[in-house]
Image 1 (cartoon, rainbow, N blue to C red):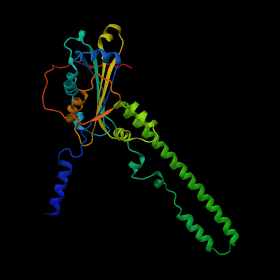
Image 2 (tube, rainbow, N blue to C red; image 1 turned 90 degrees about the vertical axis):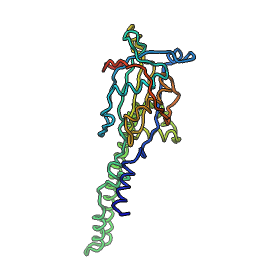
Image 3 (cartoon, one colour; image 1 turned 180 degrees about the vertical axis):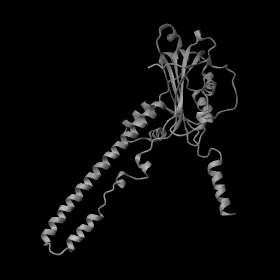
Image 4 (spheres, rainbow, N blue to C red; image 1 turned 90 degrees about the horizontal axis):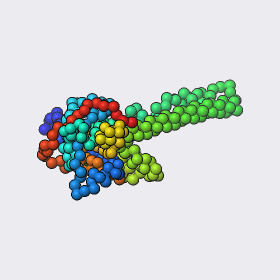
Length: 312
């Protein structure tokens, strides 16, 4: 087998094979109003409710991703509807009698990289441009120069060493400042991703620990990578109609790792995992491997109201 043919096989295996680098696990976090949850799931089966859909916000990726750019909002809504029906949620046929108004947000979180990674360095100290070779040569010249007494040379060398020490201290202070700035920047980015993925409380609990456990490490890894996400927020539509009050009754956050995956293919996986939690309160986040079965449920077409002003 020729070297060239071997190289072609390696390329095909790495870049054209099945989803070898993909992570099909879905991270899910759901919250629900306690009174709502009690009346929704108080019987033998979940109470039947109908909903309208509003287009929420699309969070663009920081890189080109045709799989999410070419997925329409209607496709997202129809896929989520397949999971909603498991908890007895159905598209409304009458605007005036709908029980819920659902906002659907979607997008991609930004991967978090430190300045070290972007510069290809292991620490900021390696980026310092202070060169001590000139000072070393100057000391050697003093020791070999004619005319100066040993005491004069000692005083001059001491002065140069003091200057070198001050410069190193200044460089160390600068490196420390850059390191702290980089750390704060990463924390801000991680907090933003945590909000989009609905895991602010989980991150806060992990930060209070002296040492992160395996769950905390996994959480931070998820927040640091780029992830597709869907956020579904449900409001009491009758309360909004009659009292002009926005009452959120439940919210769910679903996400999957985006590198090596395809948003349109990931939608059914997120809907499948979400189908177990729509309208329910979870104690903590869960990361699950979906086992999506082929099939289709006729539930009608959800009424999409289009974009609307979001509640505070």
